Length: 112
Image (tube, rainbow, N blue to C red; front, side, top):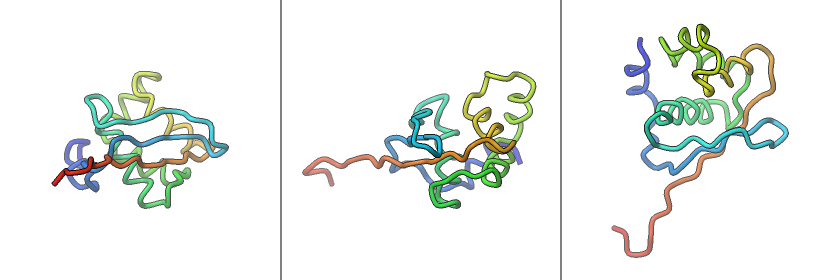
């Protein structure tokens, strides 16, 4: 299954404004937002967070790498090109766990 097909099977991120990713010790690593170049990673990291209780372990990272499909191979061939995949690669190889925290879109008073 390619990355686009996988994204269609992951939970919706339409309710998210952002997803904060930090190291296990609380150091902020990145913020993923629903914008071009990040939307797919937002969906992958969000789904992993849902499945693994907000903590991306090495097992969760390996699953995420499978979900990235063809982009995983490209990340291996071009280190640094895909920082969100590189982060999962490091975790999968025994690096520290990653924590994810979703930030929901806030509705304004009067929104229907």
